[in-house]
Image (cartoon, rainbow, N blue to C red; front, side, top):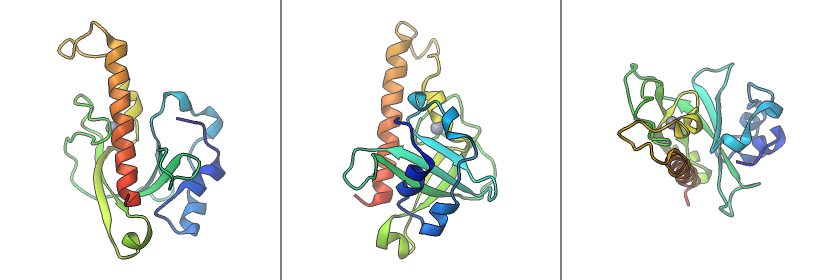
Length: 166
Ligand SMILES: [Zn+2]
């Protein structure tokens, strides 16, 4: 994805109040983020562990600067293994959480939310780039990884558009 500034990140949120967007500060120095190897950028709020944020690229006209920022809330649940709906990795299933997102606009103000399973540390881009297992076919690892990163991009964008209600 393209590199982003803190101002662009704060301006991208579609389901927060202005105050919530201002309070959303990434936990790491944005200049050290390897944007080229990310299909999405997400983090948990260090001050409020149930809260998390994810920034997803899309060329949809409603997206500012080509990205949609979504505030998420982790839904408390007993730990269990689950597949992440974004990267769909079948080997990394232990750190996947149910997150709920308030929908954008009037739907969100009326209390509508969307739920989805996502890697709790938003490491989906790393999982999409893992080397294939023998069963998955190791003749062409580059093609395997390209197909998986494409799928991750699609799933993430679809989620962002659902939150936008388009
Ligand atoms: Zn994932």
